Length: 90
View 1 (cartoon, one colour):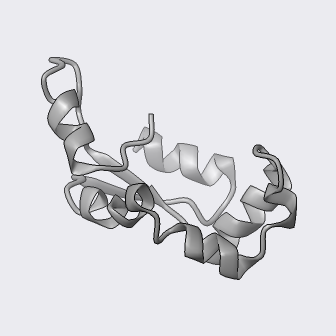
View 2 (cartoon, rainbow, N blue to C red):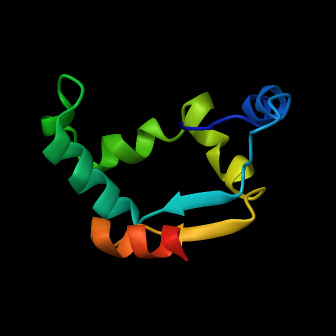
């Protein structure tokens, strides 16, 4: 689940099993490269890095750093899935 707003956490903390303990982050250039390769949404494969960064100015994305600051642990997603899964297992 992607938590993007402080209010998301407020609503989710009402769920007993909810634990917001980890943030996963990666270099913006790598995130852009992955977005283009996935082409999950129409036009993603043509999105420039400048547009990708501009998208982060939108309300939902602009609040992500505030939400991430509340996480207990930080995971580095600049490597492979295997690298990320090792961090998760630890």
